[in-house]
Length: 315
Image (tube, rainbow, N blue to C red):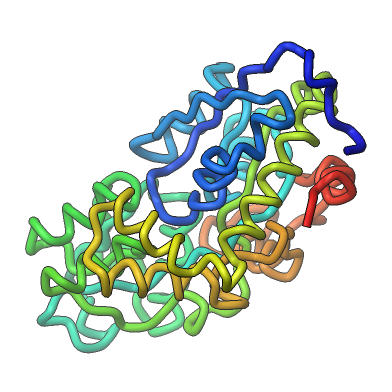
């Protein structure tokens, strides 16, 4: 297989930092199926409690690869002066605007609190844009409270009646339904195409470790293909159920959300330029950056490694 090390090569350890959500099912599958191992890669998977910790960890060299909403990479470049690049896509977020039972419309969020991870990145900005589209502005019409990544945020929304709304993705968007929360609509239906999860790295690390990064991405692409293969549906539902301790219906709903084209996993973990344009446009509007005009997309991208990985990946 082109681009692979010899069987006798010493395995290389890669530290990968993720949120504990179902969007990382391809990573888990690629590990379980040996796609990384056959490329002489060993993974140390770290779970981050929130995006602030993840961005700080990548900047400090505590791990090599981050998987999260790619708006975090933009934030690292623009707010922290870090030279990071996005190297592949992943999914469109699969978020729902989840609310407490007494909330029936977006207008009902007036005077309430929005639960977020970090106030100025990714899904928090998407939520604020949705609310703005419905006439609600932060501070004037609603407040924001930090509640951590999706898992902790969903638990906080269930436990704290003051947290009226939050962007929640699978499997938590299904488990919170079982605890009384409901959806006012998917992010995809409310905002359209969006580039959510992707992998990003320090640019200097990618340049110095191109072969390693390309092998990693090839294995990740194979994991994405495995998850999205209809022949593996039952096994993937079982894996989701075991990994996240889900009910049968929540596991099935999560898998169906993952494989929904447009709003779920991207085939081959491809990067969506239209979706990323939405990300930058929302940041320009909601944060007032770049004079309200988003910059060229390629400022934050290096997809050359992904292109090389696609040639290495096995169907």
